[in-house]
Image (cartoon, rainbow over all chains, first blue to last red; front, side, top):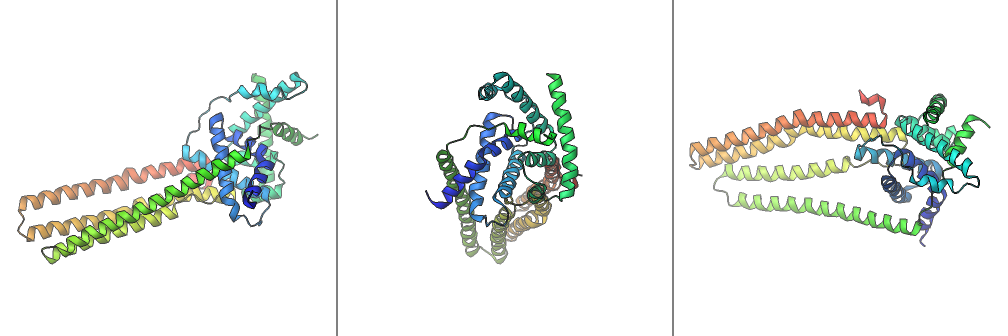
Length: 172
Length: 197
């Protein structure tokens, strides 16, 4: 396999789960999720020859992924509020040794995903980067916001997210 | 464990099934090739259209009955060339911004694309409509000086002027308003507070 292809496969291999989570937070429809994932992968593939290592691979990748997600949404301009599809939940629950525990975690995760989808675009981007484990400095590199702005904004978003999740769980 | 750790753990518990990378790569290469092919086809089409207009109107200019008609032909050749060059330049400048930039810069670049479209829509009346109208006016005057009848001269002038005025209104009114609305919607969608007002 040529080096650029091997490198691309390595990146996708390392970050596929994180990218899928990112895609899920932008899109509710499974078909569109796959389209968006491929759009992001295409963006990464096209940007790879331009990557000179000025930033870490991780921050570079998250910039591309969020920017393409935003511009794909912009192209379609469809902000529908359909409920999250649930068909894959049973499959996910099956991965857990204790199905009851798996079901609880899965419900919490879906509540969290729905809560994230309700956030404004900038808040959503910040919390996603934070949840993927990026440091404030890395989030600064990706978002262009200052560390202090990120810290205060994240504190507010975390509170809001917790409230939203609790509200969703209570409603169930 | 802090609330942040709990949220992180919950979020990262979603590990979706992996896609076959070879299939993904093949699909991306196919889409990339299609995209390049589409761009090449559009470029070729632009150049061919430009050449057709230049050749046809240059030929008209050579065979023109008088100097005014010749001037009108040359004028229209100039307009067509200018139109295509300007469109190509505009297409290049309004391409999607590169996604490697920071999220803030990217949001602003997306909004700036609408600014560019709005500028273009506001300029169209002077850049395209007025020169084209002048070109047709020259043709019509040349026709009249060559002995054409007054009724035809007046009819052509009226229809062309009314058409140009309608295009002018469409452009500066609904056209600009449409782009401004789209720009506002985009600003809200991407959360670009500074430009959403």
